[in-house]
Amino acid sequence: METKDKIARLSVTEKALEVIWELEKKNGELMFYQAGGCCEGTQPQCFEKGGYFPRMNDAMIGTINGHEFWIDRDLFEYWKYSHFTLDVLDGWGPGGFSLETSLGKTFKVHYRLFTPEELENLEPVKRSE
Image 1 (spheres, helix red, strand yellow):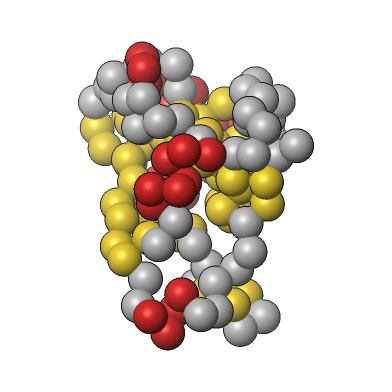
Image 2 (cartoon, helix red, strand yellow; image 1 turned 30 degrees about the horizontal axis):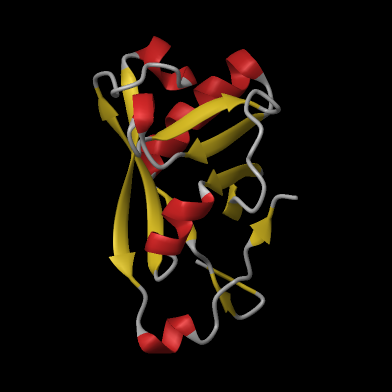
């Protein structure tokens, strides 16, 4: 997925997009946040927009259907050379705080390393202040 000749850092599977559409109907605007541990582990969490506030210097790596996808600043430093693909599985994730839990689903991210050519032309990240 490219935008203005830049390589996207984030994509989504069709199955995950279907769950997102269902969540939009129920909850309106959404946001995603992937933390670096604790209760939710490193599972991506889906909230109503404004339901979670990124910490200073967290990274917004892209959007899914117009919804921002934020990464914990320390986790981003570890995964910044990787493409994220948001997917969904049947069952409950470790935290249960995410909106898709009510549907018996849990979001998951698949990673792959960027090629050297892709690394030279990545979309910029937005940092929280």
